[in-house]
Length: 372
Image 1: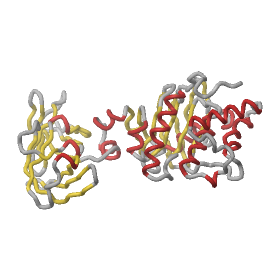
Image 2: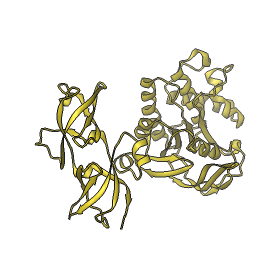
Image 3: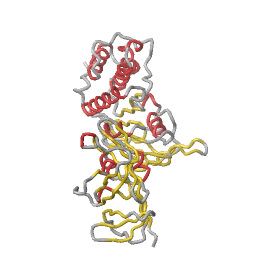
Image 4: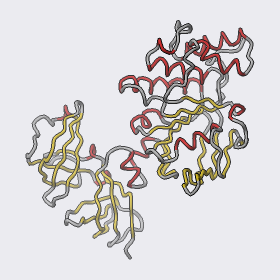
C-alpha cells in the first residue's frame, strides 16, 4: 500500500529560473528574471495585476511557452516538457472541480490518469481528505460544499500524488476575509508538514506576509526585491516596494549635514529630520525616505524619539484594534500615524494639536541621488 502523505519522504524540489522571459509581440510580460527557490520553500510572487507573476507560474506549469530562458527542477530543464509530464501540482482561484464528480472522484482523478491501482487510489484519497480535514465528505458533489470546502478539495487533489512543486494562483481570492485568513494558516501548516515547494501568486500583501518564507515583489515583468517578509517590510529597497508592501509616508529632501551617527535631511518645506548615516553620503545628496505609519508615535515629548514635531490632527480613522490619524505639521507636510487603539488614542480628535515623533532609524532611505 502507498504510504500516507505524511509518512512519505519530504520531496519538495529545488526550482531555478534562469533569464526566464516571455514576450507577447512588443509587450514584455516577463523580463529575463532569475530566481532560485529552495526545496521545501514557500515563496510568494507579489505584485499588481499585469506584473507578470501569473505568467511565470503558467510557464512553470507548462501552459505558456517561454520566449527564452530555463526552468530547472532539481537541475533538470523542463521548459520543453509537456505539462502532463512535469508532475507539478496547481491550485486555481476558481477551484476547477468537475461538477459531475464526487469529492472522491475529483481527488482520485490525477491518480487514475497515472494508472494507480484502485486500492492505492482509495488509500491515497482517504489520506488526502484527512490532511485537509474533510473526512466524511467523499461522496458529496462540489455543489453541496461551501467555497472553503471546495478549495480544500482542490488543494487535496493537488496534494494527493505528492508533487515536488505546488503552484497556487490566487487560491483564496474568492473567499470571505475570515475564511481566507483561516485557510492561509492551514495551507502554510500543510506545506510545512509535507515539505512541499510552493510558489504562491497573490496581490494581497497581508496574505504574502502571513504565509511566505520569502516574497518576490514584482512590477512590469521584473522582480524588484526578494527576501524574508520581515526584511522586505523593514528595509524596502525602492519606493514601489515600500508602498506596495504596507503603507508608507514618503519624506523627500536634501542632506544638509553629515555627522558620525546620523545625517540631517531638509525637506523643501524647510522641515528637518535625522536619519542613520550611510557610508558615502555627503551634503547635497538628494534622498527619499519611507516611514511606516506605525513607527510614528503620538508622544508627550518624553519618549525615546529623535525627530519630534507639533502637528494638527486633520483626520481620525477608527479601524477597531487600530486607529489611523492624518496629521499636518507646521511646515504643511502631512503624515499618517497608525496606533493601537488601546494605547491612548481615544481622546484624540480632528483639529486637536498633538506632538508626533519617530526614531532616527525608522526612516529608511529608498532612493538616493548624489548631486555632487
